[in-house]
Image (tube, rainbow, N blue to C red; front, side):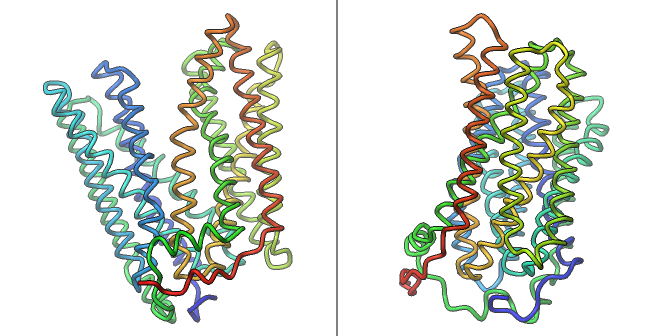
Length: 439
């Protein structure tokens, strides 16, 4: 391992996964629950919560800055705790802003903009530093399982919070919304602090203390971009996540318009897709961990297979749009979820491996660079998918053709991501002289 004599054990990995649980529990309220309240209870245009969620993605373009700052210190824990605190404050203020919108819309909107900026800052700072710590402190053979654990625990946090908070929110009132969101934020912060307690200091040596000082931001960014693997992986993350996120906002409307499904049926369809993602993640985590000792490149194989599988299942949706009668839509969507889960966990594991190989003083910048690419792709993906459908429906009276064309573009993007993943094997990290400390 780089600059350390011990790596995180399974308990340590699970404890860091609890931080992801805390992060997910706050995010789900701000991006889902508040979205619903604004559209349904306040009868606002869906564009307003959409723009606010997009704002929280946009500010995450600064992830390389936060990753670089965490590279400068001897510990990443303060950055993670600070990020969770900022996220919790942003979540609480977001709930307050929605409560204010009912009577004082301008004031509520101004507060909402500030709150969602804080949410984006908190997610970026905490998430980047947490992944950088995992990359530096997890043994290579455990990285596939570690990637699976932390992501599944984040999903668990979202699911449990949605169910429990949903119960406390009924009957709805603005005061109850603020109280529940503030309570979740406070509990999440305490959970993160407890989970992080002495995790980093219990390593044989602190991950960063024995490394030379990190250079300035521009030098560090130039070094990361000069590394062929880091640069190519940034492009892969953007392309794959663009395709991954573009399907989110159009799959349920597609099922409703083309297959005549009811709102309840399309909600169940989304649920079985997430179930498929879960299965794909678990499979990749277990298989990747078992095979990685003998086959170090197994994560790349899973990444390519997941992207190709996603493209194939998206192709199935294109065929479904052309001939919906008798098409096994549910099975198609489940298989799409499995392929998505395989590529997502494999990509995260590969991300940790590349960042870990770069060294503790460089991993934060690389995680920040990839996190920024992912955030931009997620922000653009949902918007691009819905805008493309709307534009195509202006050209053709057949909604199935419009959705089929957009799905075809997503499939091409997944194929492009698979080709980029194949090329990653040929890229070699550069021994850039730019890492000579400049500040």
